[in-house]
Length: 212
Image (cartoon, one colour):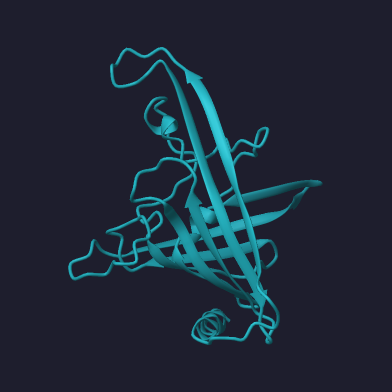
């Protein structure tokens, strides 16, 4: 069964299907901002600071004549992140009975399976993009993104069966985690693989999600 799933996914990837109708393209995104105050003695950190994080999302999807869903995602930084980081995540995907395959610059599949705290008034408390968490407040990142981060990769997610979903990622080169398309020169920094299992279900009338 596993060989059948992987073989079907590979066949879908290397077949260029015709979209049955127009591709729906949407624009979205988010803007988060915070003001923090803390008592610190080191001169490298402010007692009071303002931090923001914003992105604009361009996404699209359509359906092929064979019933496959194909689409794309491009995420544009909407606040100052340096000249080299105007666009980070960008990928295309194919989705069908075999599951879902993503190719491009994106976090690995197990990272995207992770279950995090809910939003509070629209603010993502688990957002890794806030440098405050890792430096000023000495907190570990709420989500584990791995050494490959947004490096170019292939993600695969199985269909959800009895509440379980398996995911795997393969990154040929982790030398540039920003999704630079000029990678794979001789002498790269090595490959990375990642695997995850997610469970979603109901126990005692309560909905739950967990990821290992």
